[in-house]
Image 1 (spheres, rainbow over the protein chains, first blue to last red):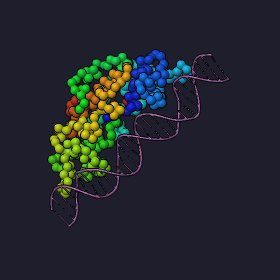
Image 2: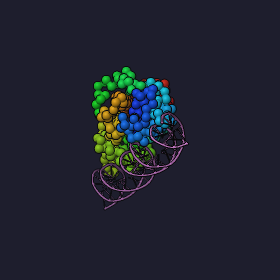
Image 3: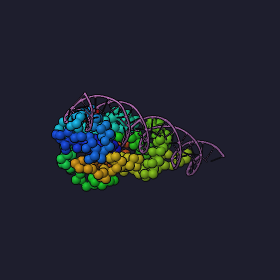
Image 4: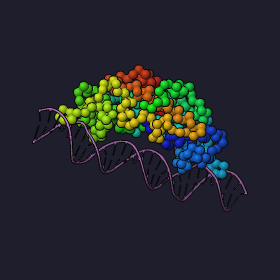
Length: 151
Length: 151
DNA sequence: GGCATTCTATACCAAGTTAATAGACTTACT
DNA sequence: AGTAAGTCTATTAACTTGGTATAGAATGCC
């Protein structure tokens, strides 16, 4: 279960936009403050624009801004725009995979995995991150013993 | 959040071994019944052997078997053996990433994501899959409306 | 109008990963 | 001996990922 650099960069950029709102933020500023290669960042921001999460303005006073309030954009929204479905197994959506014989309940497990991811990633908004305050359901997960220990 | 073919194949193979237990199962039989390329499967089974989840016997009456009871092997165990840590961000473990400025709470989110994955993947054992009966906590997740709908 | 500034768009490249294959070798049973 | 398995290492081909390059188009200032 690998989170790519693209997703990480996209989320960090969105947070920077939320912090800078309602003013526009220049790409170069996000790139330096988050240590993201500028051209790569621009590619990602363009995807976010196509996905309707970001608006952009060119020219002297140009920059990027959120297309809607940060509180209405979940982390799952951002991930889906830059990477597609939250969970996929061998490139396919969990529910479309055909298993043979006794392995069949594995599909249900992938569905459950996706549901678990949604529980987290659809509960947290960009505004939550920018404010530094996560929803209580998430805080409860983090408070559990062992949550911080690698296995 | 991508599940690779290797992980999928490994899990399916483990289920086949659980179903065939206590007898040894030949690699070729797993390969055909689960449509997995034989040589690739053998590589994976070897990793599983190194990881202490599978035992192997050569020769005429040889084959593969589980190294311990199927009820004591969780899906997370299998995934960790063939692919490493359950969740990683840009190749690093979630808790080791350094975020700058306001993006910092993102780390906590990745920790929560890992915890969510553990809730599912450490709760389900190979025996559960082989028996076709998932734990009640998982069944509850699947029963929720929307769990089966792609977003 | 000219110009600097900033985003847009597409193409490209290098490195790494993944899926899959090959082949020579070892073990174990008959 | 012979044969049917697993063992081990190397290799290949395709794909993905992270990152770069370059030409272009909009915006606003002088």
